[in-house]
Length: 145
Image (cartoon, rainbow, N blue to C red):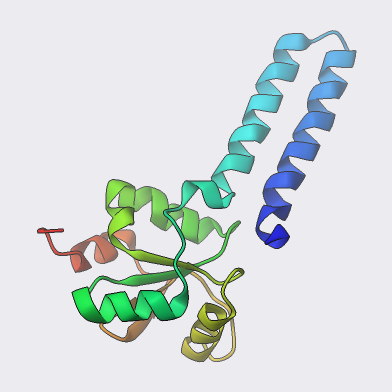
C-alpha cells in the first residue's frame, strides 16, 4: 500500500524543500508557484487520478460478463497516466487493476509480457495489448455504455 504513495510523497517532499528555499530567499510568490507545481505532480502520479481499482479476479469475472476491457496499471507510470487522461470520462467504463496492489494482476501482466511488468496492459476479450493507443481503447468501448 505504501509503495503506491512513494512517488507522490517524494514530489511533495521535494516541493516543500524547493518552496522553503524560495521563501527563505524572500520570494513568496515563487515559493507558492513551485509548491503548487509539485502538488499537481504528486496528484497526477497518485492513485487518486485513476478510477477505483478492482482486483484482477473480479475484473476478469466482470469483463467476461459485460465485455468491458481491463486495464492493468501502476501509479507513477506516465503511459498509464496518458491513457487515463486521454480516455477522459470513459475511463470509468473500464476495469482498472493496480498491479502494485494486486499480485494476481501483476502475474497476469508478467504472463502477457514475457515476464516483464509492462503497463498499461489492456485486456480485450481475453487478449492482452501492451500500451495501446488511447483512441484504439476508446473504440473498444461500446457506445451504449
